[in-house]
Amino acid sequence: MLKYSGNMLARIKKPFLIVLLLLLPFLFLGYPVSAESDSEKLDRLAREIEEYTQKIKELQVKASTLSNQIAQFDAQIRLTELKISQTEEQILLLGGRIDQIEVSLSDLEEAFNTRVVESYKISRINNTAYLLFSTEDINKTLAKTYYLQKIQEADNNLLEKLKNAKEVYKEQKGELEELQEVLGVQKEELDSQKTAKNNLLSLTKNDEKKYQSLLAQARAEFEAIQAIIAGKGDESEVGHVNAGERIASIIQGPSCNSSGSHLHFIVARGRDTENPFNYLKPIDHQNCSGPGECSPGDPFNPSGSWDWPINAPVKFSQGYGLTWAVQNTWVGRIYQFHNGIDINNEGNSEVKAVRSGTLYRGSYTGLNGCRLRYVRVKHDENDIETYYLHINY
Image (cartoon, rainbow, N blue to C red; front, side, top):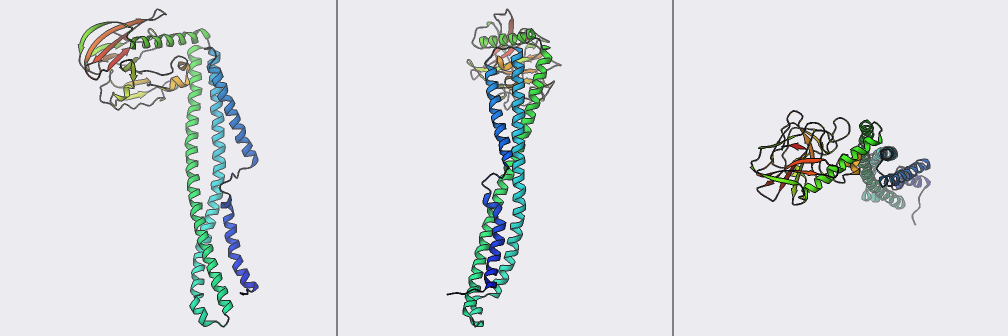
């Protein structure tokens, strides 16, 4: 049976105690280290976010009044503020954990580097063959060999923990960067929502009649466009036109179902509309599809080969599909999906055919008595038609 002196046992235990102390922080990396108050705060924010989400759903099914729309804006703004607070709290807690890991990681690396040097020295001195022939006490030789093996095992264990700690550190740094990106998007969204509310108050002057007038105008335009695409417009054939040929001009100022100058451009195949950006080529433009006087809200990403129906520079005010205006303004009360793009050139009102085909001039008169003029080009190829609305012939 091997016998160990008190000094020998102390020498064996000391490295294990050092390693254990250094590894303690990593034994709990899978568990939250936040204080209870932080956990309670996150729980409260989650509850409030759910409450405001439900409140917005309830407001959306109520009558379309100005006061209801303002209440929706207020609820949406508060919801976004809560999400920002939640993300900031998560960033704070994750940042604290990363700081702890950085300190422990530094200590582990220092300990490992020190142990590598010491282990090398001990292995040189405690060569087993040398000790067997140079010592009179075989027990001491075996004890030293046993001690060296344990040190090497501890070194290998420390190396594995160091590798794992580096992986955890890398993952949590990535999570922190993602949260910071989310926070930036949330703050931009909050600014957009506040601007949209202010725009509505500016347009209506907090007057219910003006708000209802805007809704009626948008509703009439939506119904007219749906009817025109369905072939219910009053049309007459003009003849064949070539790509780039003038076919109309944009009405300047407010007009039937329009609060301002713009061309509503639609690409359709049968009764189904398609994204015009899939066909139009890149062009010099100004993206004013978001909140305020002119800021981006919808992506401007044309990727096709067609020339545009208006000259550059193009002022882009609304995109195709689930647009910023549909999601963030009263427009969403009428449109669930914007079936074209809204564009303008403030210095040139000329409208041109994007491809060659047969030109038709038409109009549609809605229930409000508004007569919406448009032109349609039935393309020579691919069964595609393009529509150009809010124009004069």
